[in-house]
Image 1 (cartoon, rainbow, N blue to C red):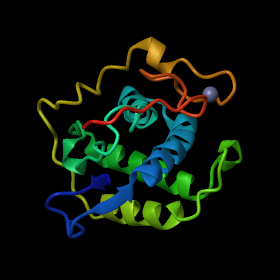
Image 2: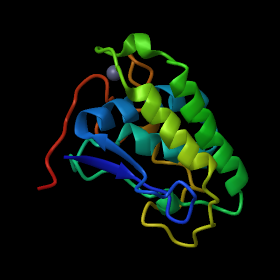
Image 3: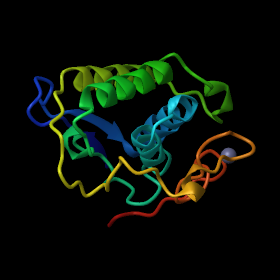
Length: 167
Ligand SMILES: [Zn+2]
């Protein structure tokens, strides 16, 4: 069981990037480590909070399509930010904080980054993910004193791993 990340309509949409449940946890861990060092604007903070909360609930059903993100008319900058987060994660940014050695995530990050690069966002009028032009609730942005990561909805993802099956 795992999670699929897709980009409908992009040249890379040949099934997208498929990650096992364990790899999905790693994926969101390293994107959160990178994103918490980069996010400045409300849209960027919302994206990184989404990563911080990624795969905490809904084990095995937390992939997404890039078209699901609440892209705005500022999407070129939003896409550039997502690519910066992926690139920084691929540089092993703060991986010393991980309790494990992620063996294959680099290839998966490269595949995901390639998919993002080949994707042309379309501004979304109303996204199920909310309006990312507004900042996230301030408590989601509080940072773990040990890891300096956003607490998100479920607490720092490196302090404890809470996950429930989506059935
Ligand atoms: Zn922590």
